[in-house]
Length: 293
Image 1 (cartoon, rainbow, N blue to C red):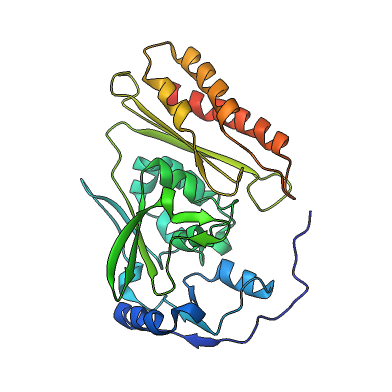
Image 2 (cartoon, rainbow, N blue to C red):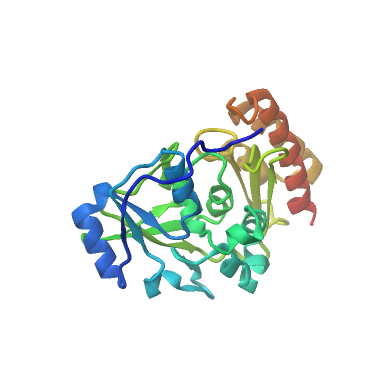
């Protein structure tokens, strides 16, 4: 399957590179409706080349120091600035130690050359069905910190994407960083994606379990990407794991709930039936791994 653009250029635009966050927010307040933000630029330039995006201004935020902040604070969690590249994120040891599902997603997101340029927030802001960032971020109850001249607001990742290529951002707002709370001690998580024959994910699943050995406190989360217009969390299947039953029985019951409640779509990458099959296989594999690890 081939996805290519007949164009070799992008539409004309004015390039703007602010040096401070205040300068960027002021520009968006004045001209945000005609502006697209560039962090890594991987998705933006591709969409512009395809003539899917046309704008008067491109606001390059890579020169803003605050947006390069990356770090973990015990009891607080992980902060990932809008200009932090995927490669920089992978170098943070705590990502693999505490946020394994997110580590899995970032490590398998494109190739090393793209990861040297692309950003996690940029991936999220594309808001197209086959991106990798939403499922693992939803697992950890992450939120996007959004700034404007009017102030700052936080939006949960599960509420950030509101449609295909549509987010909760207003024209005058900038997604400044992602905050990912610290998971409970002993939390286990994984992320699987299937993308055979294409660079895009056809189906992906993230799973997390906290307090695995105590049914009264156990918390399991399941989040899916690329199978529908927006990311999906399998709330009904998650409730299965509050029961005090053998793991094999719980997984079998959860798979039945997932099969009956998680809706899939048909597009150029695959049919709904094919995705439904992938969901079953992936869910079984990831639940077995996190519940029996």
